[in-house]
Image (cartoon, rainbow, N blue to C red; front, side, top):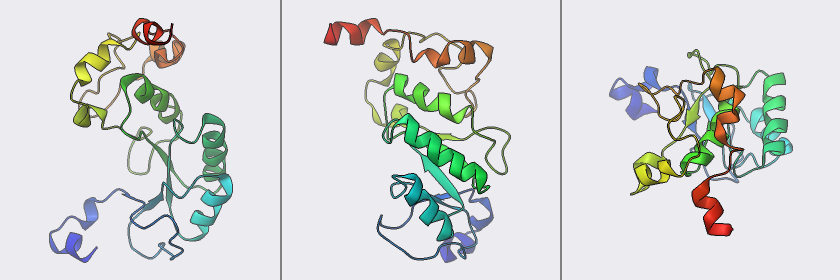
Amino acid sequence: MDHAKKIGAFDQIAVIEEPFAEHNEVFVGDLGVRVAADESAHTVEDAARRIEQGYSAIAVKAIAKTLSVTMKITQLAFERKVPCFCADLTVNPILVDWNKCVAARLPPFPGMTVGLQETNGHQYYKNWDKLMTYHPKADAAWIRAHKGIFRTDKSFYAQSGGIFVPSAHYEKLVG
């Protein structure tokens, strides 16, 4: 935090995602920035404990922690006025849209006008553009970010981001 202040970046920090080890029990509500529970919020009970420890946001991972647990955690957070955002574990394009379906329904993240989603597969997968072709809705307006924003228009909601549409590529792999 001291270094961020020294270089003038402290006031630009929107959130720090789980900077400590999973079993750390230290109170973090006095750091002067929003700290998000992430890996340690496996259950609703874990999320409640983190909120008591001063965590003021929760990074939810609907892909890894199941949709039902994610909904329970986001409900708890909503009731306690703790914002959530989606983090995607560096996943393929179809799973990005799985998280996008959750992020698009979250209340706007503080200081923003939209739900927040961290996604970085395009930075880590060597063949990201090829993976994009496996998405059954690869040409949809919501697939690619524009200036950092996914345009989740009416067609996105009507088609659930394409996550329930079969992918010919993946069907061949398991068919």
